[in-house]
Image 1: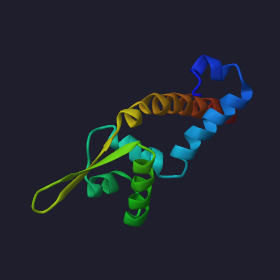
Image 2: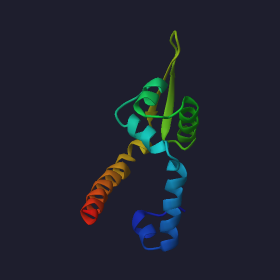
Image 3: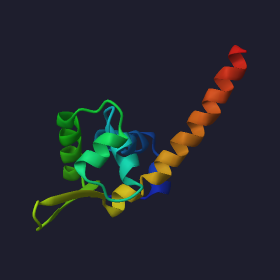
Image 4: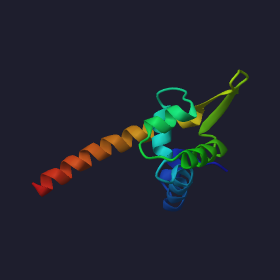
Length: 119
């Protein structure tokens, strides 16, 4: 049975399980940057690679496959010459922007706090 957010919030065990589910999909150094790159529209493999500094083609391929298996990214193959392949976020993948926005807000506030405490 899938619980609602208010139900999960009341139970520490369910709360931790939900966090683990999220981390299992988004874990690793590269998944969040890949998702962030795709938030701005569909991209080809090379476009994603160019927007993420220091990611190797092999790692990008692996991470895209993982995100596709977890229904965060969709791969679209166009029947053209040469074959065109684009990656896009699924509906679920686009909802991650709420998580990213919260992370950015927290990161900015945290950096400011650390700088103030170290000044």
